[in-house]
Image 1 (cartoon, rainbow, N blue to C red):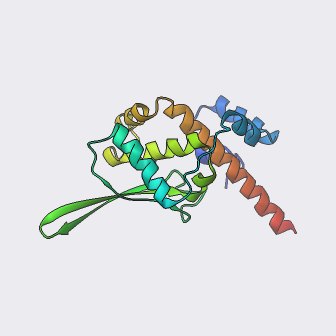
Image 2 (cartoon, rainbow, N blue to C red; image 1 turned 180 degrees about the horizontal axis):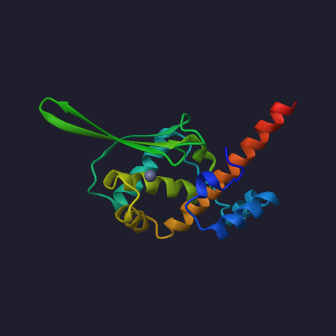
Image 3 (cartoon, rainbow, N blue to C red; image 1 turned 45 degrees about the vertical axis):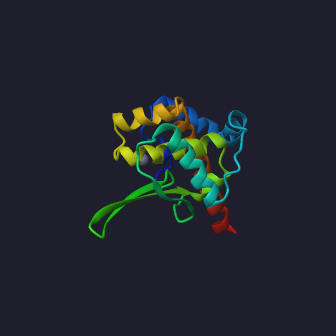
Length: 177
Ligand SMILES: [Zn+2]
């Protein structure tokens, strides 16, 4: 495993930006800096509330996409992979009709996230209903739903990096004692 804490979530960003992040982490200021910029929390705690939240976003911006079968928090989506959520489209033949079920799973850690971060992940997963890859069309759709999308995705990755660093540090302490 790399010693560079920015390797996992921020590898796609410019080296100078990643260097700044390493400084913030080394100085123990990452969490504070995010807290200051994103003080607003959300109360979307239950799966029912999450379904309503994502459905509301969808009906505002993507009315033409088919209905959502399921939207849930998933504690099996771990920090180290898939934290940005999963989306599945299950097609099955039912009485001659091809039914498509759309499910969105969002990592449970977003329960505790700033409100803007939950919005970012919801927008990301909704955009995947129409665009599978992370290409131009995908990001255009994200921007349509959330004009500040790119900044938010960066800050979510920053937040995940901070959590990951914390976990790793806690892990090290646990092994030492
Ligand atoms: Zn994605």
